Image (cartoon, rainbow, N blue to C red):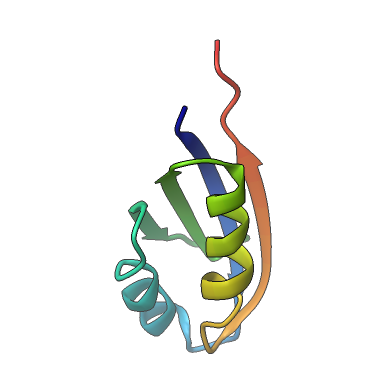
Length: 78
C-alpha cells in the first residue's frame, strides 16, 4: 500500500524558490507550495512505503541546500 504524507519544511531566508524547484524534481512529490509564515513550504508526497518515505526525507530533502528542518505527517488511512 502506498504511503502518503505531508512534509512541512523550514528553509533559510532567500532559499524558498530554489528549494521548491528542487523538491518538484523528486520522484513521488506531487505538490510543493511555498507559504507565508511557518513552515515555509508544504509538500505532499506519495511513495511506495514508509521506507521509501524515509529515504526521500533523509537522503533527498535534507540534502537540498537551504533546508533547515522538516516535519513529516503520514496520512492516516480511514
